[in-house]
Image 1: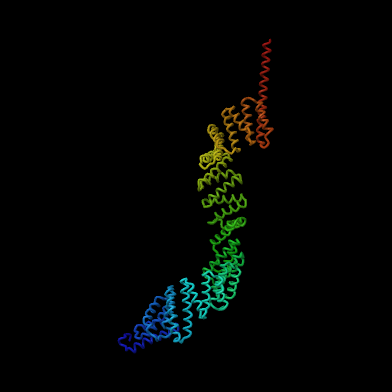
Image 2: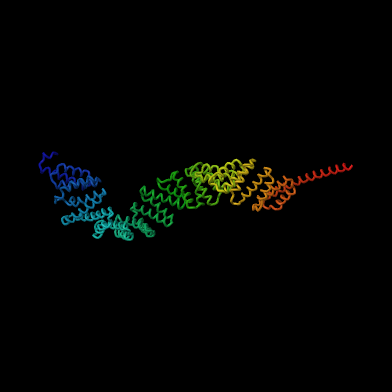
Length: 627
């Protein structure tokens, strides 16, 4: 029976129509799978053109519903080949209906220009056959929808004026879909930079058609528009109306709650914002919306309130949202870091202390110590700052190591006066220095620390580095040479000492205390060489107009020693007495002078006894000679 050659033309046509009618019956029952099978069977032998064209239309419709838009268009292409020559097609499968369907096929494939042509053809054919279409529901529904879809095609092509023409037509003629047309009208007005007109159009949607599916969307858009133009109270009012009247639309509710939270944040009301964001979780949010609400809650609890524990406590109340150890670590750290970034150093210290007590061995532990150190330093709590900088140093190399070892060394030297620690830290700083300038600063600090410790080897090492560094100023070269000279004196390397002290004097342009110390040492070197006259002259010049009492007194004491070498005890006594009577601020020098005076008294007594003994002998000899 399937072979057409064995069937009469009448039987073939009958079977063709039977398949189509059976397919239409199944289609009306929404059994499109079996309906499709019958329509396909009808095309295997299709002697009747009208029936064949109807089958092709319904197959195009079914494949469209199955989202196989390319197949739908193939059926329609075959349909149009014969449909335009027929005038007896029913309205449901007439040419205007096929153009309408083809328009949707192209819309779904984002071929807006082709869809535009299809819908225009649909309207043209529909109007041409208007009086002959007796299905009023069909023609009014298709007329309104095709008009709106034409507007959509122009909208998608950014041809807003043309789109407005069709949306306005739908509104003015009160076609089905007016709420949508008003909504689109408002959206276009917004895109054209007319926010007030946009708001007025959208308000018509929910005021005139409150039960329309577009009413809550329009309210949301009104709230967003007010928010965008920074009219927060009006935005809040619209969005409150949304979440009050449309609780049955959780998808829209969530968006409204998110925007209300943002408004509350912008108004500085963190607690109200938290309340809105928390409600998101009880309105079936999407995964993305839940993540966004969670992120905003985290932002408020961490950045605004500095209460990460409250954030963790809330998450525990939401199934599937408990913070794991890694998140607790990062959030607690961030809460402290934010306070540091905002220069809230007291809170920064407290929060970093909490963090370190909970996470002593985290990837964030080293930066936590560093930022707590910086916070202590900003609060002038230098002891605790140094301790934290040293913690960073002890933890080894990191991006905070160099700055921490530098600051720890500075505090050890200037605040604690712990020169041994300062020397150790400056030595580490020298090795870690990332630039030549930093390395030079480390060498300077190490030289000064070693000098204060009287570590001659370390002084010699670092002073040599400083003196030979091209970055050293004249003053720094002078200081380094002074230190090298003193080391050489201690080692009794008087030639080296002379060279360095002369260099220190020569490079000192500040006329500072170091200059007068160097001049004193210059005289001392001459004295140690036994060049007493030279030493005396240098000491005399060094003491002349010397503004530094200590080094002027040192020069005078040195001159007293030279007087003793000359056996001029009277001159030595006079020099020492000037120290005892004149020096006010350095008791140790007065004590030294008194000790030397006491030694002089012993020398004078010895000299007097020797002189007396010599006198007695002479008398005896004279007496003997007289006899």
